[in-house]
Image (cartoon, rainbow, N blue to C red; front, side, top):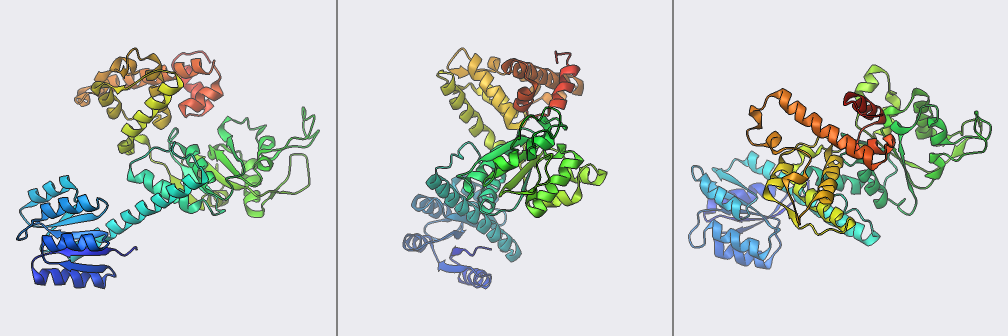
Length: 453
């Protein structure tokens, strides 16, 4: 655990010394100040990660000190110490910029947990800052990953830490959460960045062609094989192979992939010659692979070979902090692409977008925002430009019957499918990719809604 440089600001000598001695015993560097004026001078002359600040002191009170500290250096974390029964003062301090508060008498176990949490947070922020600097130096355009939530910050941080390794990575998450984007970020941060990242959607491959697609084939190895074909493994030599929808692999392909991960060799279809390539495998799935292992449809040994490092992308509904940033990003992106001037959203439209749960995740949001920008008549997107009705997401939507709500969701899903099919000129593979679902699921939905297939 990273150790902190801490300033304890407390006018009571015994309390101040007790906190000092305890925090030093935990390995932190601790400085003392008995009042607000001395605290400000100490901050100006030294470096501190954390200030434990008594709220009630003679002279400058804690709130005044907090405001001045944040003016001097807004990155210093401040925890307010307040007497029990005056929590409203702590709440006021949180509004000004304190990161947390603890009450007197100070619970030392609680203080340890709080200090550790702050140390973890500061380490994550520092690592992400260094990661962004490194990305900038390499010219990596990873700004497509728009985030503010701590879940995504931790994932981006982990991507930076594992990128330089050769370890296989399994990215888990619902359709449309951005698994390929995360895989590309890992590739671009790795020593393999000057080589290709080859993307294979296993769910879009016919099982009879899957082996040839991945490993290649020799001339005459099957009917129609009129010449030798280089597979995706050879194409990715020196770089990264991203296997999306890995749960769709047939048992025979699972065996060949396992052999490659164990021996780093494979054979083209119709050949007995062992080929060796230097490929880093990143796989992704929206399925429960552990459940597939238990039911016998996915090999357990392959499962553990693929998941040396596991990264789980949260659905958009669980990281709503990112939503406003994503909405604004896509408005700017699609306005520029379509030569339109879109200044933003009406308050009602933004409220509607923020309340929606996005079962299709970021990919669904992209579809919604592109549509809204394209059909908007004015410089501001309104609720009329969105493909759902306000009533479905109003504050009292809980009063709506479950059947009516399901009907609204089905209507939205049907609209998005129709638009995706029209956009791709009825190409089911491309439409399924836009919607973030498999082709089999798309065919089911087309049949369900009575649409042409």
